[in-house]
Length: 433
Image (tube, rainbow, N blue to C red; front, side, top):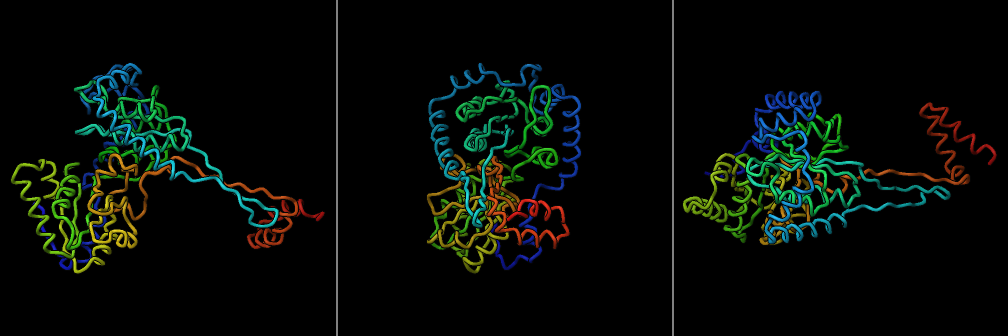
């Protein structure tokens, strides 16, 4: 099971290895398989999608069944419990509110007398959202990927998700979430083949400008493989949490939060860093007690055994330093003054402050986005935002006098760069001034 270790026992190269966690050595083999799938979809279109869906998802579809019909969506809404629909609406409202506030504004300013410059926003024309099938339906991911696109003004949102044998299609709650988010173009396609379809287009599935959404190693590898042809969002791997705790933190809450992260996937990562040996030991005792009672899933047990860590430090400053190197997807700060610690954090996907802000709050309903960088990518990437669906364009508007006011600067720089034509374009407009 998970063990307590001291930071001082780690060599620099070992800490570096922890900070560069990625998918395993399967990557080369996976890439070969993914490239074959992409080529199949590019050359054979919908027929390849149908065959690959039967092979990987064990669902046999007819060609006309790839797209989810309005009748299927209506049936999903009718069969879904009202409590689930209410929860979806609550989460959707908060997600929309957060991302509307996040939306940048156009602006116009005068930089020199007579010269106006500004910025205008335009949404991407089309976006593909990928919703994993997995063990349980990720309806919240529909909201997290589709609502910011709607807020940004994207006109065409294409959704792909693998069909489930028990439904002979996509899980009904996922379709309900899509309905509430206003997504109407939905395809029963998953895995690398779905990414290939949205990147290159098939007879039915349209090509899009950008693909967003999490997935397994095959989906992530496929996104990396098509990024020369289509934009992609943040690279994402197994989910992870890092908790910073001090001597006053609640060991039970920390244990439960580490377990809740571990239940995502056997490859999920759960880490506690603390200068308090007492808290570290109590967290470990809580985890072991829950395991003894049979209250931890087999997936979580495997995850905590292979990818769990309780790290003892000499101070909270060391906790912060390690966290910034580790760059976790989710960071929980359970200290006496969490805001003070947050000011020192430079690398994290999303931050959760205090005992009453567990990761599930952000995963589902607080309003922030749960599509976040993992595997140390938080050092380079942000989580999914409304910006991912926008293009920013600048503009310049100058009067004749405004051009004259900047004439000398432009001519001098044009001459310095050996661009006579640039200078002539300005001189032709200012020779009479």
